[in-house]
Amino acid sequence: MSRLLATCLTVALAAVLAVGTAYGVVALLEAAPDQPNTPLITYEQADQGS
Image 1 (cartoon, rainbow, N blue to C red):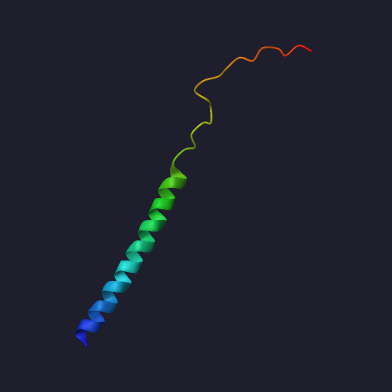
Image 2 (image 1 turned 135 degrees about the vertical axis):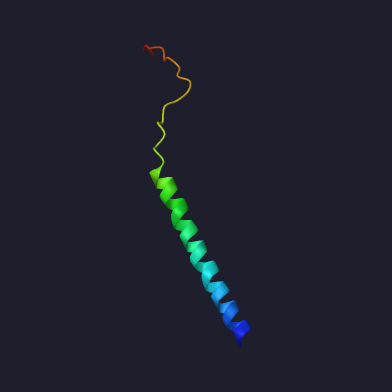
């Protein structure tokens, strides 16, 4: 019976750690500042005459 209890506690602890890690990763990603969406290279466009 003690092995079954130890197994159940280990599974519960692993699940809690997995959920906590997932929330931590999401929190870190939300805390990171957004990167600017500026192109590295821009091309000048010539006027398209009719």
